[in-house]
Amino acid sequence: MKKQYAFLLAAVLVLSTLIGCGKASDSANTGSNSENGSKPAETVKIKYLVPGTEPKDYKEVYQKVNEKLAADGVGVEVEKVYIPWDAWDQKLNLMLSTGEDFDLFHVMQDRTPFSSYYNRGALADISDAIEKYGENLKKYIPEDIFDGAKINDKYYIVPSYWVEMASEGQFNIRRDILRENNLEEPKTPAELISAWEVVMKNWKGNNKPYLGTRADFDPIFLHTSILHRTYDSFPFTVKDKFFYVNQNGEVKSWIETEEFKKDASFMRELYTKGISNPDILVMKQEQVDAQLDSGEWFVRLGTGGSLSGLQKYNPEATVDDIGVVWFNPEKEYLRPLTFKNGNAVPVNSKNPEAAVKFMDWMLASQENYDLVQYGIEGKHYTADGEKGFKPIKDPNNNNNPGYRGSDSQNGNVNFMRFDLENSIPENNAVLFEAKPDAINSIAANFIFDPTNVRAEYTNILSEASASITPIYMGVQDYDEAFPAALEKMRRAGLDNVVAEYQKQFQEYLASLK
Image (cartoon, rainbow, N blue to C red; front, side, top):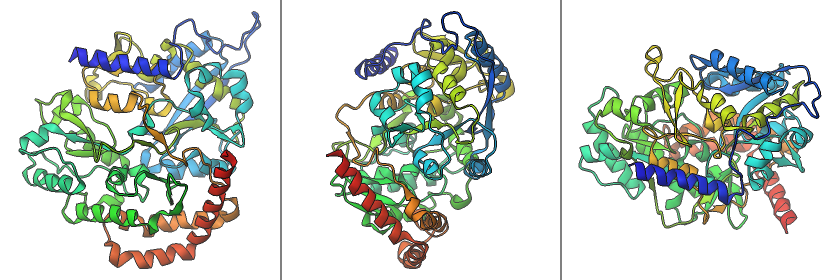
């Protein structure tokens, strides 16, 4: 096992070398404002919005973060504000529209891409701040990823370089549950459903191992893209929720494709066979997380899970009991996006430079990164070699560490540590090792500007949530419900939006020649 971990970590380090990034060191630039012994600028306090639940020891950790920022002369103090997952979109949009005072917020490209915020006029241009204060950002984020953060050659987001985007299209499966039920690893969607039915029937836990996800109609957000590798039309991706784009440059209305219908048929079968939660349309993210954290799951789309979670259901489980499955693994691996997550500065921020300074400071040293992501050494974790860490359980926090940051929100593979005892080796390999033969979607860096169809675009987003999501999640039968839903979408302006998208995409392709 140790050899396996050593190999994985070596691969991560090789990845860092391949992308031309140097190793972090404590002697790296601290992001200090002091130059030639000059007095640092007055400290500016920034407010940083993220989705999720505030960790138990957040205040203690961020007191240390702010002390370190002060000691390094950065001139920035940070307050992190946590917004519950189920309220995130609504709360953030309200704060942006009312011009509420904050300075940094998290962006999930597979949920609401930064271009959507830009098109609303909600993002600050941080190009000058990155040029002036982003030495470490430019050093540790590859240029091709940073280029995906540009619109009209200006930076509007700092991407988080924490994952190999070609990981899209796979799912996790519990090998211990397969063995428990004398099942083979499924190779097709039909085999997956068949195996899942057996598991549901024989489940010994307190709660059924439903498909763990919230409702949506976007396959990239849901990771129902696992099905797309089984279609003859692959490789293709779905951009900005509504647009099917293949590698020939063809753009179509996603909900009107045969691929959407096939996805909906699969989800319908899950729902009618009791594999999806009967309340899936109203499930909150916290409820989904609670199910997955309990270990009462068989399959999860995307990657995730830990040994401690598995052992809540099966005390004998090991880190090798979570496997990675790709349908048709011989097919190409596609990166639908250049980067998955990032952090942006709202246009109403009074301190955009301070926000960039903080993000740059995080990558100035391993010490800075560890403090933000893993907490206080000796209380929340202990280092385990160069790239490992051991979380310290807190009996007053359900035996979870009292603090944990989020690599997915603002992580970087050059600094990330791994829980060598509890993390899943196959997931680590998929997420954090380069796939040099993977291909980028032809639309990975395309930014749609809906200005000319802004009202229609807003309308179809609202209508799709009401009319298309129940069909895509399998709650409503496609053949019965889709004709009326499509008519509503067309009345909302779908055809005009698709035509505008096609026009802009062709202009984008022409600009690359």
